[in-house]
Image (cartoon, rainbow, N blue to C red; front, side):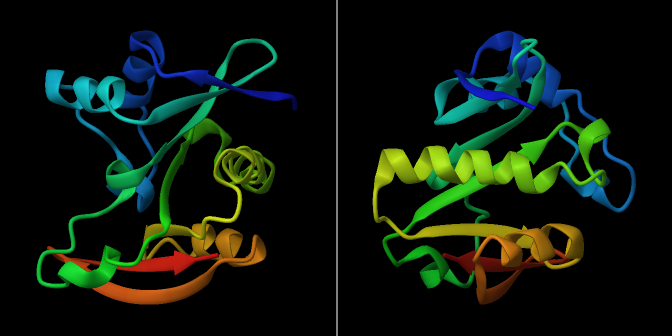
Length: 155
């Protein structure tokens, strides 16, 4: 699969906001709204498309990739590039994650040189955590937001 990065546009953003994941990953479902659309269009979000111009996934960087940590205000205090990713639901759980996320990491490495990366993942998402560890990330901090425990991982 040949992948490309495209600036986020309304067409891709609309698709992303209508994706529906199966439980327990439905935690990552979005509700379409004007504010959600603005979030994707006005912040550093990028579409990952294949050579047939089909949307495969997306990624974001910076504050958009962070989960508000409430009482743990220092969870994001160190200078690292925060990364968030999402892959089209029909492509998850089929072994596509490694190629997809490796592509995103390689792109970001070229753009940001030696800046350390950080991501935040829900602790229940063992599938993603396993992938991130395969790609060199290690667990750093745990925090709770609402009823969900999150883990920050660094590389």
